[in-house]
Image (cartoon, rainbow, N blue to C red; front, top):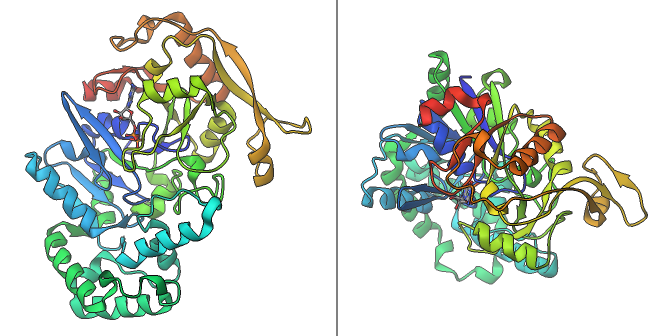
Length: 435
Ligand code: GDP
């Protein structure tokens, strides 16, 4: 499996960071292919916890090539801060590479994001207001500024000028904001460019090179399938494509360069921000999941909405991504909840029933889930390392998911720690590497 894509199979925050980190040890290259610093990964190593917003999860392995692909949008201030933060903690960042073709988040993108959300009032999408959406919009409008532009002050200034001009109208309330000054912005970004220069590179070549040598390349996704701008619950989605197909575009490879696709899903479901969520538990049980699972955003600290596992949505995600494996995280969080419910169908207010994820927004917003009930367990799972040591109820829960979705479970998370994981037979070859 030289090319392995690891994607979120729900609404993000599934624990992709930990799963990628586990496999990254064996990889030559880990490359992020979309999103920006709206994503947040938490990796726990012993007593230390690391939070990353832009840097790929494998960075904790000394010298590992960790690339930020062309499909990612990069805030140069944030990446510089992450580099400084890691260096302060003694982490070697020499393996970090940033695509010269990745687009840059500019100060006006953040202001536009803010202005856009404020204008929407109650209809807010719940963006993180980090300028990611406006940055992707400029990319499509051919007004984007790319990482390579940081290396030529004259070109940078020209491009900023051209990009700023059409925004004057919408940014009028911010007209006096010093960050919008063309010269100050050019200077600021040029000096960030000097700092980032050693990391800027032609990232697809790094990936091709590793693939040609038959080495493992991990394409690391951010957010999750149901937040995909094409296939998710539009408009309550992110501004990029978190599905595995986007790894081709965002890393610069062909479909044949992806041999396996793992979907990461929690044993329940969470969602941040607004938008439909058919299995949401807006009750004390939802609060319990939030507390037990620590469901507060890595980047924003926002409480996440919690609910039962949604197998209709998960099966949809499996098909969209062509999943070859499921990584089920946070099974430990369900300990003590009995019975457990798994959504297997939706029904609309008029009684229509939906076995498949509905494409129409009005329907997705109104459906409620029909559940299958399975018994829970009381055993603390955090010490379990073998599938056979899980209580039979937990094994049945996993088997039900596997059969319903039609994709084998490759690993199961039983705690936040790196070693708190149960590998299934399907991924044995990688387990040895990660041990
Ligand atoms: P990501 O963006 O998909 O990587 O997800 P986050 O990093 O936002 O959220 C994952 C959180 O869950 C982190 O704090 C992890 O340490 C934690 N976590 C990951 N796997 C497990 C697990 O199996 N059990 C528990 N209890 N926590 C986990």
